[in-house]
Length: 328
Image (cartoon, rainbow, N blue to C red; front, side, top):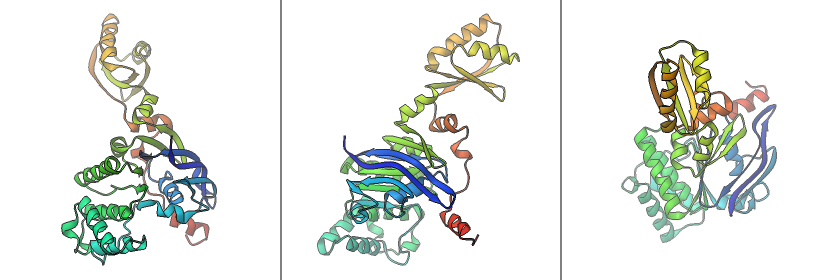
């Protein structure tokens, strides 16, 4: 098994604040690996350390076989990055932005021209190549940033919250580009996101991160198996909650939320008829029943006691540093 990213006991501390707390993981060559967690969980700080933009407090990082701390320049040659915030030159055209980036990586002449055209066609912006970036929509900007990150044919592409702030239709377009990059170029992609559907749609494996710690890692199915296969919702006419709870508990883990019983079972289609049968025997009238497969948010709630959606506010590194220095 070939690993292109290897992280061991990685920690980042800002003053007394731990942004990342001793995390370890490996990313396989050719896979889409996602960091899923709420804002402020440590996703961007981690990606900044792996891409050599931020020095860790402790721990080791290997990228494409190179020590990211000792050989940052070798790592930078082999990676492409799409940052969470826009970093294009707004006063230049799409073509000019790619031209400058290509020259930085040693491309020139016809080779550079051909590469720019390839990337603009890939992200469907060739017709807008001479348009100044400040007139681009958010989706067009994100697509151009992907083109820029790919201009030098990197081994690994890092995408930090690539669809944040984009409309649903544009988000799907970005997902399609990511899938095509993996399929056509066998590219390793490291993705950070707080959108559960994004991680589930794109990732081969997902690491769930919260408060700077990785709390679970695996495929979508492996993670969902933590909370069981199906969740059954039942509402009864009867008000003897203890009696009902005792009966339902024989089928799986049961809890009551706002008068509705939530039952975690392996197979809902097999379990529901059995519930009706035992309810009839005990003179219990079922008013409503439904079920669904668990989501990644269910996994997050199970592991942390809170929802990813409940988390608000974005971690502002600049504010932490200013506060530490007595300016805020």
